[in-house]
Length: 195
Image 1 (cartoon, rainbow, N blue to C red):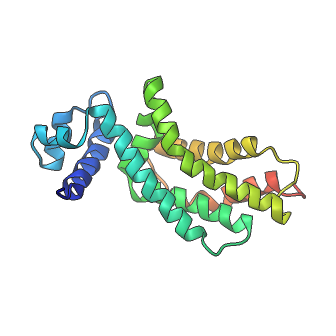
Image 2: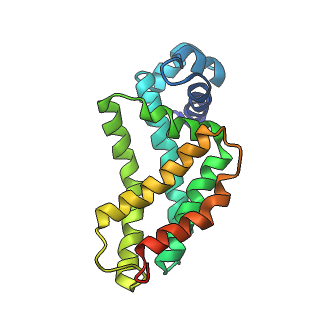
């Protein structure tokens, strides 16, 4: 079997740009092909349709994001340190790729129910990392023992996600990563025994 990665990656990267600049609904497959420098038909060798491109780009980018966070979390014992690493990494990734930030924070939200379910399935790995951090904090005593894991996960993801969306809506005028210390403090105050 031939290696499809170089063209596949080019199409994914092109899709991020085209969807960010045109919106998902106006992002035609022909525009993605042109941006990627491939023939329109080439796209269909790798993807079924535009929806498949959107899910694949999210799966690809989120997979790399999850892998990077897991590497950075290795060896860290304290939940506080893990939580800071997660927040900083999330914000840094979006800072580094403004087009991807627009796609994840805006374009993935305007989708049909079936697409949302597929996206949520991809997001599950990321949410599992958050669960591990909360469980570590409860086990080590850094976090309150009476935390509801589901609510704590929603709180962490919700805060990070809303701050990132606001940043995108404000045309990314500041470094998102610079907000990590304050976000971390806020969340730690909500989870710690003294909070």
